[in-house]
Length: 117
Image (cartoon, rainbow, N blue to C red; front, side, top):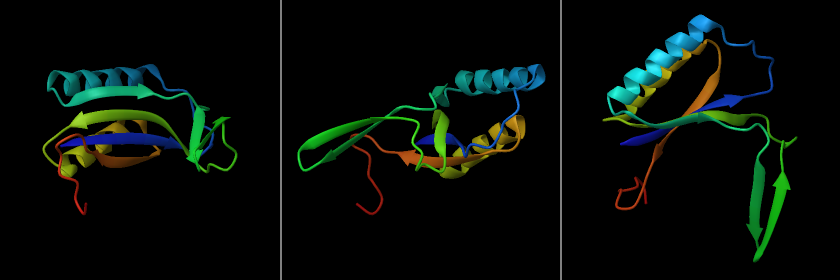
């Protein structure tokens, strides 16, 4: 099972990460990579480009977007045995970085059975 674990930012002021936290995060990422669990990770630009298709017309809008209450600022794509394992990895992440919020969603691909579909 693959899960996208995303961290969000609601615009509240965040402090800079210290060296100890960065070292602990590096060890966590190395552990997940060595175990074959971590497929991809990264931070995302705060603005981005929004694309909308309606009635055959495509509209692009450059961010940041004032109407958004929170934005996704980082992600990790993991492959684990269960949702519970993804939740445990996310809990470990927040134990390292401290306060924050995120979203965990299962990722489906070709050939995957989508629940409720």
